Image 1 (spheres, rainbow over the protein chains, first blue to last red):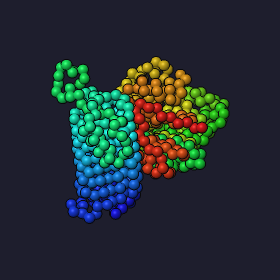
Image 2: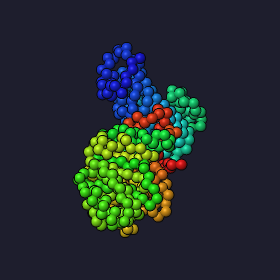
Image 3: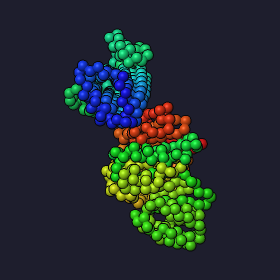
Image 4: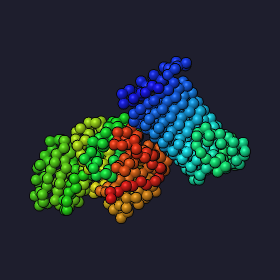
Length: 227
Length: 299
């Protein structure tokens, strides 16, 4: 395992080192210490490597990553795993707002709470939150799944497209065009697999499913009030 | 942008280190606010009938001793002066409103940065590290302190426009954001007898909270009222004689992070500013919820 101490090395040097790894690299296990809230740690990775970050990180940690697998043993600032393409990010603490924003693929697990706008404009990422999410989560969510073991704040899934939302606790309010939907066996199985992948213990049958009423896809004068 | 920080010590043993920790926090927010910086610190209480005024004049060689002498004669009371660069802490053995009124009448060139029995306010243009050095903030002890690093968007870069803003005895406020109804609210407050020193939107917020508390509201009640009456983007951190508060607007666009241990509570715009606090690795760290009033008070 390679250890990088951010008290001694800059984030820019670390990220450059990670970006410069050849596709067949043997340097696959990394440990980052003393992150001290720095921004953009491990952003833009595109190698099948595993990284453990010991401590709290700033904005856009693991943004835009492909293939890589990260564990953040701490709190995350704004936009963790923003635009994630593939790979996996696990946050052991809480996350600030816009976690997993516009993510295209991969898995984001937040063991604590996520704040507002979790999964905003998600485009295929699966997000599993052990705690609760704040307001406007899954706003304009296009595809992928958001699983919330706790509660969801105001306007969940506002203007949602085809993403699937599963919430175990209370939903403060649903956003425009987001409705509760029937939980079929297919969805129960899918939710069970997501919880397993996330390593979170919860009973899928206790969740409710939410998704798009599909009334806002195209402008229709009868729905003008909902825009 | 702008960066704000606040540190509230629960464990009295940490009080000698307040300034050192606050300085690190303030410097941590340099990228968010390189134009000016300021702090309010709660320490060195003056007893009984005395009050402390933090005064500012751009000229570091302003005739402070002469002003002190004139005040001593006019108000027939003891006046002590401690000069710190272009700021002065004046301890006056007289009613605080009376002392401020005398200064306003006889020395309108002097600006009152803060007043009360505990709070001192230091703010100036320049990088946070320069302000920290200029006023020897590292060496300050105390119970709690708040700070601000400013990147100006709504009004000019001057010492007067820097935060914190004071609007009542031992009360101050720092703000990250911009208010959209500050002109109407300023008129509303003027009609209720409040004078304004700048055109800064954050000063309006400070005077609004002071007005509510002046009407008898507690700190949490004043903040709840603010959620109804203040329109715009804000993360506020506020200090009072024995309290510390954090409030974010309902949209919560402006960042904030809170951390708490058995020994302290700290807030900052970003975690970077909390990263070097003692035992931060054991702290509970979370983002304060939108439109939720957070307050702590000294036991």
